Length: 334
Image (cartoon, rainbow, N blue to C red; front, side, top):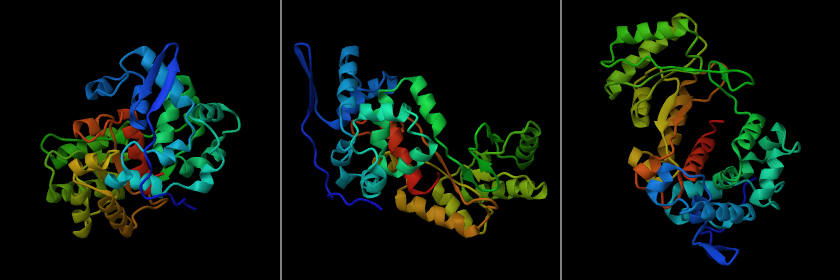
């Protein structure tokens, strides 16, 4: 069940807090979130970080007192101009949110650290959280808090094997070669397998990024995996549109790769949008190559990509990164 909200969420008045004789004013939710963020060089470069430790602490206190409902009515990037914001608002699950809708950000932190918030309960509320809620609560948590809550979360994916089970570590085998020599790549694959690497994925960054070369690399990895019956999956880290074309040409594609960001503008610079990603997912699923699951998408995100693309809209890196995970959730990666 998803909630129906107004098509253009309203913008709140500036957020203010008096501390002693001084009144701190944050002109928007994006500014409040940015000023509450632990000091980072990227946010400083973007000019969105707190100007002093005192301002940062006041911003964190203000954020802690903010009701979680605020994030459904005030957005950091306008609904009408960003498809990621529209995805976040339109896909929000009101029923899942009902368990925690009465909480403030600070209350939510305390709840997450309590025994009440076990793995099963966190799974139940996950679709009721927005990336901004998650980013906000993480800004007022210590590293120890984050580790404790993360331990309660379970993210399990499967294709030819299963990744994410408790007390397991999976690794990517990356047999890159400066000239994409098939013999050199094959040697690197076998060397890595001998060390027990590659159960997460055998993934190649091609030196020459075009469809014919990508298909050659896909065929090489598929031959190795099939001949030795290795319970793993392969991926050529080429642009998603190249992978779609390779699928149309009959290439043995396991996972589809793409770098993504948390704003529409960032993804525009990557030459992608939500429709293209959904098209790629459906194309990969049509091959039916998974044996124990159908998690066919492989994404990379990176704090700072929105800043590099000049598409961060005054939003801090941590929040932009959390918004990128809305894209992942939309494509049922988890």
